[in-house]
Image 1 (spheres, rainbow, N blue to C red):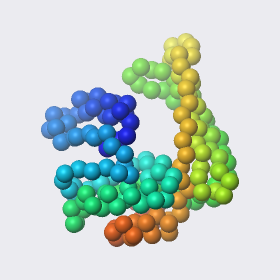
Image 2: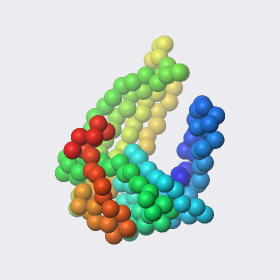
Image 3: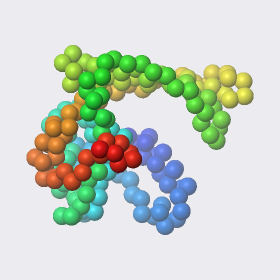
Image 4: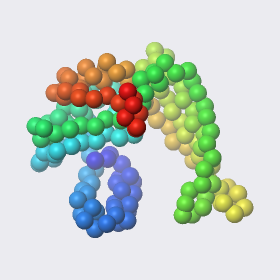
Length: 179
């Protein structure tokens, strides 16, 4: 599910690049993750890329998790990717990256700025992009994206998971499975 029509259109385009049997299994639905509904249950749910932290209101996060729990089979599994808890104590930061995007060959300059809000419960993030042609480095586009992330502590996430019916089986520190 996604609330963004544009992201769902992109997902549908990307689905066309998959093998037919994989593509046929994918369905997309434009809904809000805090108040969605389906007529069936699922074996698993995934909240990737710190998406749960995009829900900055604690009650809305709980609503999201309660809905997911309601839509899972009794033995279903929820996988959640969250920012590292140490990020809650991190000072304001800015960093830059430079990379090439195939197949067009454009160069991307990306500047990320992060700053905490008063009280420290939210992180305001701004991505600024400059897109240039690979051949002559002529700038073809500039844009920025801003959003807030809730600064979530592990205990806070664990409490809301338990309150919405989940049992925490494992907590991993990174994508390699380290503690």
